[in-house]
Length: 195
Image (tube, rainbow, N blue to C red; front, side, top):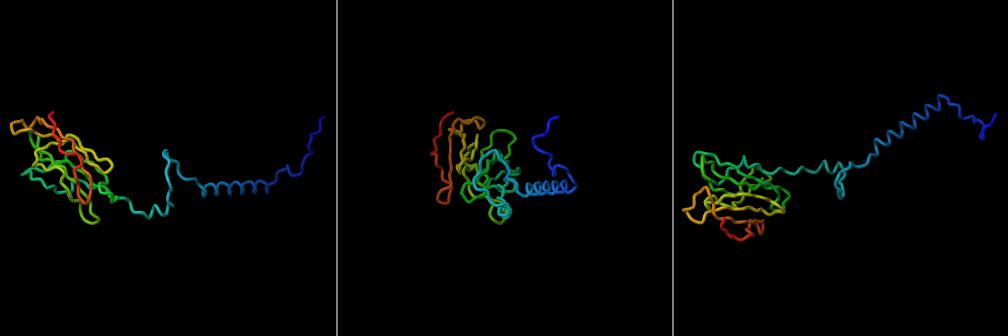
């Protein structure tokens, strides 16, 4: 018979007090891990994260104005204006988004001229049009609209003469507008090209 290298120890016999001590230690570890949680994981790295109470106290950003709630400066007779395209973003750097909308009168046939309008939401009150970038009286059609880094871009389609059918514009112009010195300024010159 072989003797163990270590003689039998007196404390290897378990008693109920040992089980209670183990249960209490385990409960303390579980409680501590529930209280001391790491921040939520995200796919992107983030900078300084504000304290959760500070974030809860900060007001949520206002939503971009809805063009459906605005009266546009366009005369359509008995029909209502239609919003053809829209995009949103902060154009003037005030932290509140604006909406840029392409609007025209509904027409049964043909290609009605478009207007491009900038809509803002004041601190109090309903959204309103604050700028007209393209007036429908200019008889242009907007084929695309984008807003990036505070710049509105659009492709404008027009007509070289009154003899050109309204279905088939024969001129194209790329336009850009930016908010500068309290107004929207066109930064891309008008350069109509034949299409």
